[in-house]
Amino acid sequence: MYPIEQQAMSPEIISKVNKAGIIGMLIIDEVKHAVPVAKALLKGGINTIELTLRTPAALDAAKAIKKELPEVCLGFGTVLTVEQVKAVKDVGADFAVSPGCNPKIIAEAHKLGLSFSPGIMTPTDIEMAVEQGCRVIKYFPAESSGGMNHLKNMGAPYQYLGIKYIPLGGVNMSNARGYLESDLISAIGGSWIAKRDLILAENWDQITANAKEITDLVKEIRG
Ligand SMILES: O=C[C@H](O)COP(=O)(O)O
Ligand SMILES: CC(=O)C(=O)O
Image 1 (cartoon, rainbow, N blue to C red):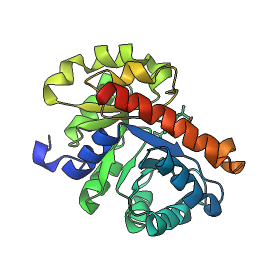
Image 2 (image 1 turned 180 degrees about the horizontal axis):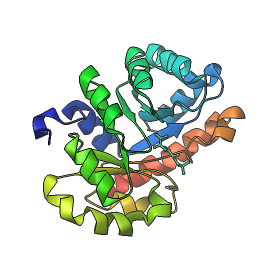
Image 3 (image 1 turned 30 degrees about the vertical axis):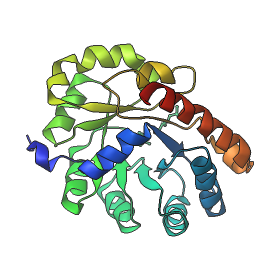
């Protein structure tokens, strides 16, 4: 097991993600949408983003956000290969996440000094992540795996390690409170705030309104 001081996420990023409490997950099809959508999120109080590598525009979109909006804490999602770990590090990623728990990917991120949070949905996944030095771990797909109830039961044996989770997958305004009220949660994340069709329709006002609605809830619960 990696000692705690070598954990896969830097204390600085852990503190930013905890403080944010909410991560806006994005699928960007057109690079020209990157800065406006990030601005719309910032206007609604969200400064932490997971930009998925699911479209060819993702890396250039990230470059544009890093250049124009350095205050954004920019993570990448759907990082599935060693090459992608290098690519996101090269464009200045603050952190990266993946849907599953692949020790090769986590080791590469460690090597490059990139904060990384793998996805888990079973105790075996958690144990693999812990062995790789992860203490802030993505819970994916959260809702269809049993939501907060499943996480509470599954996480009980590992609680003494101080693990925190980032649930994604089916999280939205209707279930956010249940996650945010738990001590197990670092931050929640999801695509509902800036849905792909809202981005394509350039509906920045709706994205800001969605962001404000969830940041108000985060403030109400966490102060
Ligand atoms: O990593 C992200 C997940 O695909 C987000 O799931 P969601 O679209 O249900 O929010
Ligand atoms: C789903 C997810 O965890 C990801 O795209 O990174």
